[in-house]
Image (tube, rainbow, N blue to C red; front, side, top):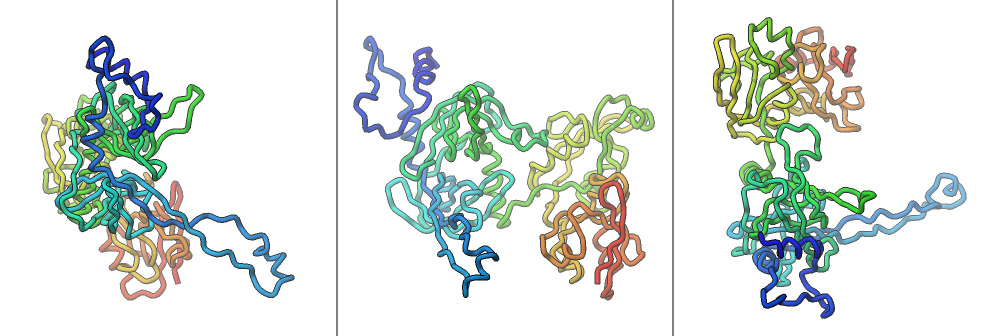
Length: 449
């Protein structure tokens, strides 16, 4: 890229796609040399951009006459009419033949249908095919075929310092163009939410992040608050992750995150000596679920995971972070250390959704809870085995009985529980349930009746 282009980009960090001011236009040439322009980038992208609109309730101020104090003096409650507002978001066509559009999950949350306005002004109906709150990605399906899909680059090839352009429709009127550079890349081993996204100073809010060839490298999800230095950082879901979500939604209806049926812990110096392994860091496999894909791939208790997918593993959290960002059906290359040397394994990830059961499938007293097996040791060191309560719906039957997320059921009706099948067997045919649970560093009994 020439020094002249760098000068233009840095001098004009924010440009509108459509300028109505003659005074704001740039000269077409300086000293006979044509100025570089981002117009070709815009022209490649704009036909793939759409506007997504949904109707959302407007949060109105509480009516003071609805207060119990005032209701004593009036015959009936005052009612405030339901008010709604139209919310706009940017979308981009990622599959023109199938009519698939990518947009933000938070923009369409709670809506099954949306209105899609194409670049040529046509308005068509769309339905939300599936969403992934973790990556803030939603996939919309429209019946209009032959749409222009955006070109997509490999987001793994991005480098810090690469120039990017953000194009979006934050005001619901016309697209805005902002230029910037990549300041940080997504880290697969990070448990920090903000480090799972591309960061750049091209922070226009909603929109698509493209390279200088007009190819999508990310999809904007948020921007930071303005700092003292008048700087804002934009966060974007990497294009590769967005495409994985799209494929999962099309195949399963919802993204199925990857799951490996093992338990791990950090490799301490004492454990390294006990296993006779000369290794400073890693994650020790403390349990492998029999019959799981990990078991079938040859993983063994005592294996020390050193590397996964080409990334070094220093502790158990590194491994959990990598697996949590993969999807069911994908395989990962593991390098593990054993006493006799290093071994390469390649397990196929299972679906975390399929590894869980809802309470209503087990017992009516557990309605509202979702259970998983194989994660007990990762939640509490006080539980070797048990069934993990991954979530509980507030106000449900299980919630009212005192069951909470991250509880570990270690026994039911005085019978030990090691997995979902043993839990089901222990409470089968029983109307009253007595659960012994581990919560944090303590344990307690719950009586469900």
